[in-house]
Structures are given as structure tokens and as C-alpha cells.
Length: 379
Image (cartoon, rainbow, N blue to C red; front, side):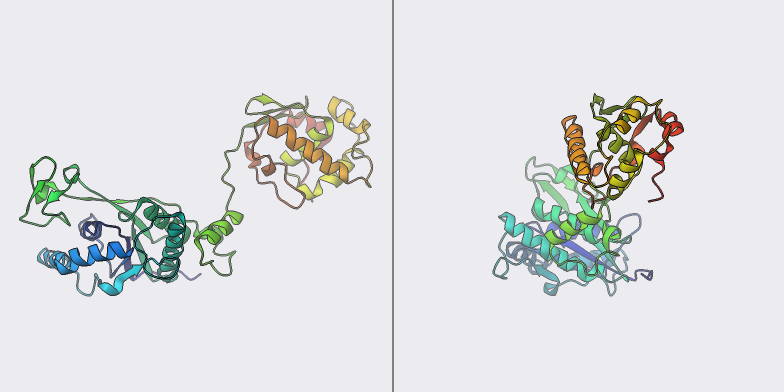
């Protein structure tokens, strides 16, 4: 994909019943160490939020007051901060009408689909930077918007939350929308008075994982559904697994999972050593068959016993692999390896366990006797 330097920025904010978070965010963006004035402002909200925002910011003139105060401070906002009723993005209900509030799980999942769609309109354009504010709206709304940014966000995009000073807890009179100069605010809870200089907001840039790079080259089209995209990303992203500590004593047939010893049969141990050594699951049968023909293993007791057994001695008995695979999984799971399929997968699946985490003992000693166990790169 051709790299393009962003030339335009858009602030996308979730809004609930507190329209002040929007003006607080815009003001804070303009007054941070590296000021940013968005070219456009977009708000995602419900019908209840729209009425409150329209009344406070437009009918009472708070938005225009803020613009005038920025001009008085010589902040260059010409041609920027495009914002009006056309900037409202109303979350729909199950019939496609504007929803009053997000009350149910289905409401929130529809909201996630809607926010994903709105973000896609901007994140598909490499010349646009998305500045996302998650300060407003219900907690689930903010969480879902943040999740959508993790799914779609690119290197230039940012997520913000506005942090208010403790003095604003419980509310003040007049309502605080931004640090309006020459204004005295009175705490509703304590009656204490504060000057504008005492009520400065902090804009916190929230670090987030940008997952788009994991999947954008693999998907022909990004799914429009939030749930579908989450599901498809899980198929290409590394598994979210708390991997156990595994130790293998290759000479003495010792295995432990998080310090718990595991007793394995010779065939199970041979299969484990092959998989842990990098053998592809689909190649286990032929490699276990061939292990019977390796010379010079008499010094290693478990290998000698393995060769004497009938398991994997017959190339016409592939069911042995399935049986031993199941037995190995069962033993490791009993020892506390919950996601055992990451190391002992089905034949058509790949080993996902990070093999570098496995701690080996006496691997070199076994390799001197039977290097075949670890020479798995050729298949």
C-alpha cells in the first residue's frame, strides 16, 4: 500500500448525556504541547444525547463562544472545526430508527456495527488522521468504540480521553464546558469557588494495539459486522493463550508442565519430542515409522524400548497416530495444559505453541545417538 502523509484530521467522539466532553476535548487538543485543530468533528450518539448536545452547544451558544475564545487566543481555526447537525451520527435501533438509549446487549452490538462502519469511512482514506475521543457515552459505548479503533486504526490515528480536575467532581455552576476566561465556578457539593486557571483539563492519549496490520493483507474485504470482523481476526491473529512452562528431559523421558511431572508412554514421548522439536503435525506418521529403523539407539533406554514395540512399526496402521495423539493430549491436559492443542494439534492444523519457550535437558546427548529426532526441517 502506498504511503501517504495525512493532510486532514477528523475528531470522532462518542457522546452520551454530557455534551461538555466534546468541548473539553476540542479545547484540550488545541492547548496541548503540540496543538491539533481537527478539520472536522463527528459525534456518534443516541437520540437523548442529541437533544442535550443541540440545546447546550447550539441553542445556548457554547460552541460559538468556544470558537470566539479560540480566536481571541490567536489559535488558527480558519477552515477547521467543521461541526453542525450534519455532523451527528445517530445509532439506529433494530428497526433502523434513531435509538433513544443503549439499554440491551443487542443495542450495544448494533452500536458497535454502526461505529465500525463510521470509522471505516475515514480510516480507508490514508490522507486522513482519525482522532477518536472515548470520553463520552455509556461505558460499553466507549469500550466498543475503543475496540473498533483497535481493529481499524492505523499508525497515524490516535485515541484520547479527557481527564477532569478533582474540583469538577459533583459539578459546578455555571456548567463547565471548557476553561472559559474571566469566569468563576462554584462547586455544587462544597460551595468552593474556582477561577478558570484552577480548572485545566488533561488530555490523555490512550495507547492502543493496532490490529489492522495482522489481517488487512489476508482479507479481500473487511467485514461490516463488528462480531464477524472480531471472529475473522481471531483466525489470523496469534492465539491469546497463557502458555505453560514445559520442560523435557530427552534422555530420561522426563516431562513436566508448570513443574507437574507427566508420565508418558514411549510412543507419546516420541511424538512429543518430535512436535516440540519442530515436526509438522502432518508428518508425524512417517517420522514415527522411520524412527523404528534408526540405528544405534540402544544406549537410550526409552528409544530402544520404542523400537521394540509394535506401535508405528506398520505403515498400514495410521490410526496409531490418532490414538497416541489423543493419549498425549489427555496426559498433558491432566497436568494443567489447558490449550494443549497449540502443541498437539489435529493433523491438518499447525503447531502454534512457541517452541522457544520449551526448556530442554539432555537434548544434545540424545541428538548424538539419534539426531533424526531433531532433524525435522526437511519435510
